[in-house]
Length: 575
Image 1 (cartoon, rainbow, N blue to C red):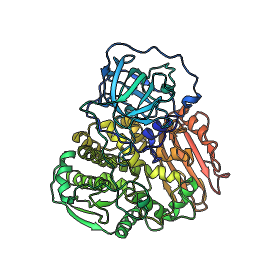
Image 2 (image 1 turned 45 degrees about the horizontal axis):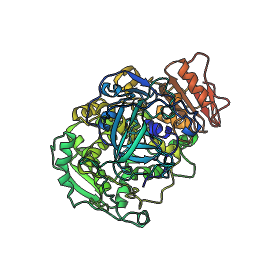
Image 3 (image 1 turned 120 degrees about the vertical axis):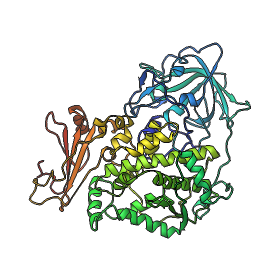
Image 4 (image 1 turned 90 degrees about the vertical axis):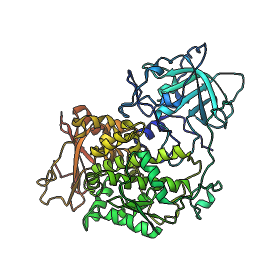
């Protein structure tokens, strides 16, 4: 059973835009239809009041006549070119139904409480798959049931038929749900159990590897039929449109061996001695604690997402042998590892590997990881859809990995961006998982998180090419040269602005990013030079950064450059 959802739909927008909070985990079905051109509608900004806080608008009259059947396949054709600007392009067929009577088959989800479904959400599938991403903004329909004399409307477990007047978000709409970023509203609705022969079905829950931590989490295990890893290879190759050029050898790790393999990969990002300085930089930014070993924290985060690795040639996979392939969660994770091996057999990924294993440019590393993870998760979702794998139970697959320091929220937000935003990015260019479109992204991937957050930038080289700040930019500012320098990127600056809070309020303040570089001195002084698209964007970032305790924020009049300074030399350093 899903928990009641917050009143404000800003949570949906934050997740869809930069969903690093690891909160709602809902099933999103892949789209199968190409987008169609139409006019766009601009949505209102984030963080709007809840329905309870909105002044009620005068209700519009209900539509009459025969109802037109619509489905989520049609709704999912709406497109969002830039998530921060929240512009929506509706397909023409949907535009024509605005204000008319429609019907749709969907699953009910609570909006405020299970006690009353008078206002509720309708989704394309049963809420609960931990593996898949939250539903996109095109897959959530706000339903307002008509008054039939009952003080409360019941929750319906079965697939439901919703009939009512469709209201698309339009400029100037005063509907409270529209003002809360719900683009689809069905008003004056009736909701009844659907008894059609083609009704969607709820799939029984499955469970993860049993262990002491997971044993108390709930449902009984439901297992899949046994399978050998090699049997998955041709299935995944067909789903992703790849050739099996070489047989893949499978061997297993013990959990401790997997932990060691993850640690080796994390250590490889920096030269000997580099991690101590990097941790100090991350502490200055509020991304890490002094008492923790940053590498152990990162290892703990990684082990929540990784069960194994492919080698560079794509012909050898090692995975955690303690996890059972009869558990759907484990199988889906192995699908991702096999998909990566096949990608390596078919494509030259050295350009991605260079970014993935270099940590002085955090921006490029996260962007490369997001492109790769978006591709792998897309393949795993298609496998899940083909085999009807859904899970209402919590994910306990990795629960037995323990003993790691808890990551600060800011670091968790930053490091999980590839798994959260990667699928969002790839779906913009390959909404149906087209192999050629995915291949094109791998051949020429974005190099900045700005292009991941704003996919429209990837089509415009002038936006996807950042300002290059020389590594020597701060060498002459003090008697001693910096001991470290590196690039943060839009995602890291956004997380810094939010200062460990839920992402959302400062998103627009970071979306004019054009480049940056930091310099760090032995005495703990940190200087960050940031470049912005224009004077207005620089001024907005300058204003948003001002309240950050411990930092001096400097911007000269009419400048596109903003400097951030903290540490021992904060009051004497003059860039």
